Image (cartoon, rainbow, N blue to C red; front, side):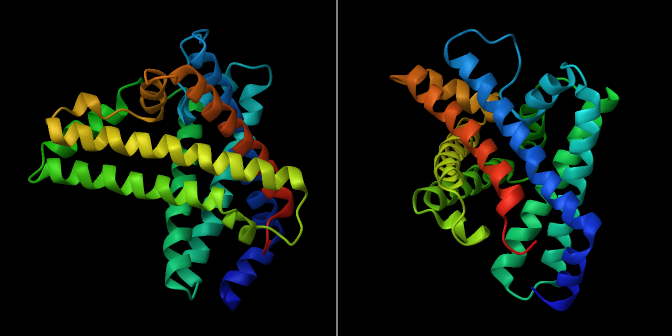
Length: 256
């Protein structure tokens, strides 16, 4: 990290917001895992196992609006810090990775704002976006590329978790619970994102945007596989584990 990025990271507001953002990310993943676990055993109450569904669930809890506003600040500051790191960084690979994560967390901040203000739209957003993309010239190719990109990201997460490469993001010798949670969490996220990418590729191949579903659809697809309920339960627990890891990262992250 160069001097400019280091100065931004040393700002106490950004530092606290960075940690708060990871903690908020932990809450979201724990809720996604809890919803997915309910879906696995057919006891879900209609919530979507996605970031939107998790935020809606949080909004319905006592004090949920306050927690959402706190999460909004955390996501926004975390995204800001990652965008600054991407702009001022020196390593191309790290800049691309930080930029992508920054955009993702700013999108989460926007989604949180929609939920907390009651302006969020209904479901079907992924299918609507895919239909619009597919209507463009070479749209099926673009949708297929999105799917292949998601598969690549999922594979990266799976390998990062299995080989424990996420330890590079943490200080030396973090507690064992952080390591175990990170490994299970990254592998579970990788599996879910790979399935999500496969749905986009299938939608492109069939020219059917309804096949392109979000994370909730990917987890439902997993449930329909042989031994799907068991597999979905394991992935759900993995999402909970990633949430726990995110709490640990808020405390033990390297460089902040």
